[in-house]
Length: 381
Ligand code: GDP
Image 1 (cartoon, rainbow, N blue to C red):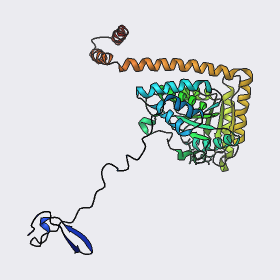
Image 2 (image 1 turned 45 degrees about the vertical axis):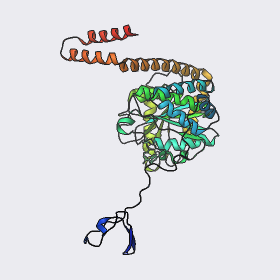
Image 3 (image 1 turned 90 degrees about the vertical axis):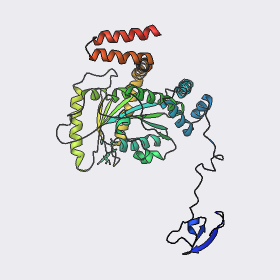
Image 4 (image 1 turned 180 degrees about the vertical axis):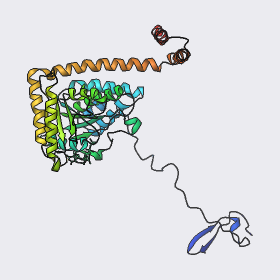
């Protein structure tokens, strides 16, 4: 019998030291043995108090860090820009405003193409080409599908293996939250931060399947459409709008057996482009072939882009396009803010719910219901 539960008897059992804390381990009970428990680590790490919490930076800390080209601070500032929290947005907007005087001196290049066209492979190679010329490069993306489908543009850095390890490259996946307009505006603001951090080349990548091209087109100087030669009609499935926006078309995967087909596709694109009216830039979009994977024809793609910049800087279109883009973003921002404020107003939400039911029950027409809700909102202001 144990005299008290505090008696601890240590016995050797199959080479293991088992501590006999338990009454059932007394010899009178057979067939049952309670082993000593394993010591559990504390739930709260004892080291936590030694670990420094990430300090909340002030607006001037952010601006200073960005201006010094500190990638970690730049990354944190971009996270603020992407944050939906109002208190983050306040700081982000101040940082952006303070960075604005240092922006505008980069080449902004949009790159689009359907999934599988070779965007990641190409951006890796194009990016290395740019870095060899002595610049700094930021690669951003707009992928409005990313929240729903985890993205057609994968958000990880492994896609661009060479660039990812370059000190002069900053790669940032698409902001994921919100509408296309919201996602695009965040990327537009990230451009500001990157330029202030000294990135003189900005690539903005998007998937060539929808509306996001318009958003990218409205924030870049040159818009490159990556295509691949397929069997049959090359122009099939390409939206006319995307072709009209392109300043250059580059046919990828012009290697091995595919060279002939790529050349044929290039000829077809050139013919098609001739049918479009000359764009306001006065630049007839060019078509070239290359292989991102085998790094063939990369100079050709970059020569085309250099020639474009020469052309539009001489004829003044470069500045004109940027002015128009500023105007576009002013309206976009207003539209977005109006919508957000309207729909997040709790009174409006309640009234909308009532009006929606009335419209569904044919008690009121959609126009009258809409007018009522808007009137109510305006009177509240
Ligand atoms: P993304 O979806 O547009 O980003 O395309 P990826 O860069 O991921 O490329 C899709 C596939 O095409 C990958 O398997 C690449 O290895 C391949 N690929 C990319 N560029 C080339 C190229 O120049 N030639 C060949 N033959 N394959 C390529």
